[in-house]
Image (tube, rainbow, N blue to C red; front, side):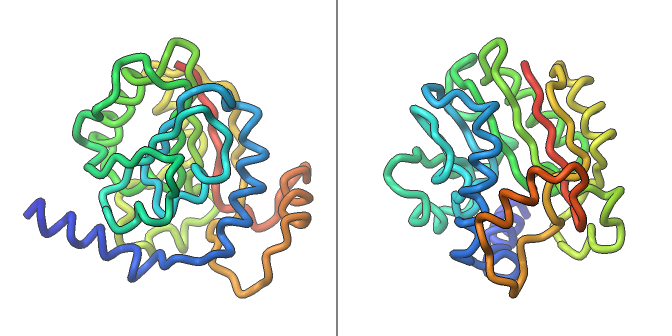
Length: 216
């Protein structure tokens, strides 16, 4: 049963999340925005890295990327250390060895109980003062489309997830309920200047994802 589940999750990238070179242009801009909370000389881990656009775009001295699908490693490049395993298993990294953990569109694929296990492992891996950065679909903003993804298991809002983090021993640094649109799937050409403009707006139209930065 576990093997069948892993096979299904691996095929997710063929069915629901195909490779799109345009996403790298988007992530270059988002990484520039998020870099303010990430030490450029520190160690970083990305959970559920997918095609690795965030890790490839961010500046950090050492970078690890975790995913269950080994076929994705070819997109990551030589600067990223691959960890191919379930996020529910202990990670082969020393306690207190990371400055940053990043996860985008990740926790909604797990039950609340599984999410708590993952947060406990993140807490172990982060140094005191280390940061967890999370980008998530916001159920409050997109209730109709939230479960169009057949692998979504748990619905989160920025308030609910912020409380979840605090109950798991994290201190909140920043909460943005409206961060980016719900999906990057679009036929509209991606212009980096337009994304930068979007990020400085005081109120972001069409937003469907939240951003939370928390500290260990």
